[in-house]
Image 1 (cartoon, rainbow, N blue to C red):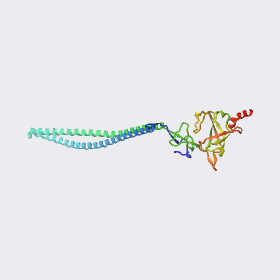
Image 2: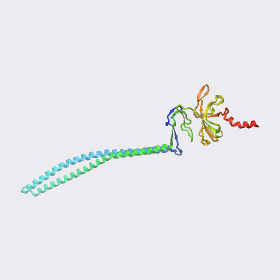
Image 3: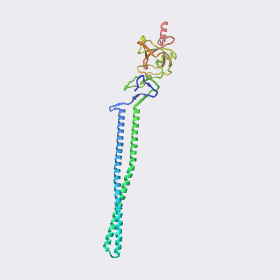
Image 4: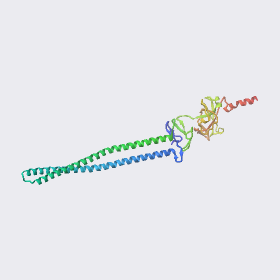
Length: 332
């Protein structure tokens, strides 16, 4: 927030204008901003929920992986033991066949040993199938665990993209409803005609900035019917509305420039001044920038209203305009 007397650099932000309209629902810009904020929060909640879900799934997958690996180790131990049982059963069968061939073992006993060997092989096959199943489960869990970080990164990227998009929409919305006024030059803030919350119309003045080492100038509006008498270098007597000349005198000035374009009543952007006819702009440099009042020199401030008399051949503009009337009166 700038104040009168502050020093600003060219490009510094000095004011923000709100261009939004009011409806029964409130300020349109505020409603849109609130909606975008709610949408951003909802998107953030969805992203956080998805990330939390993936983290839970990763924890559960790690638990299943540990369980499956333990089960697989147990199955492999059982498979190794069963392989030994198969070898023993086959050895018993081979010895039985050899003894039976010598006539010392009944055929029934040989068949029993053959059945025992077949049973051991079937059980070994079952253990191997179970081992293969646990291996597939472990591979599936590991694949899922490998994909979860990718999904987490994707979810975060989508959340960031969504939030960036919403932020861009918010910036665009703010840009449409807010207009930032920046200092056109470096200098000192001499006056702030408006206050926070005040409405301002087209052509209104937000701040008056005096250039660094700059001087005040008076800008006059002269009726187009009199502009032919005004030229650069002429003397001007300036009277300030706030300091009546009858008491505080006038300030001497010199015409510096005269505009070459006439302005209509609707083209004059001075607050507090009513113009009913076409006018020209006249810029006047001042011999001094203070008014002697109440025993002190009071600095002139931008925005002060003045009236002026331009001196023509030691006569005022008013006298010059009425000279024909005086001449007619004299002839009469």
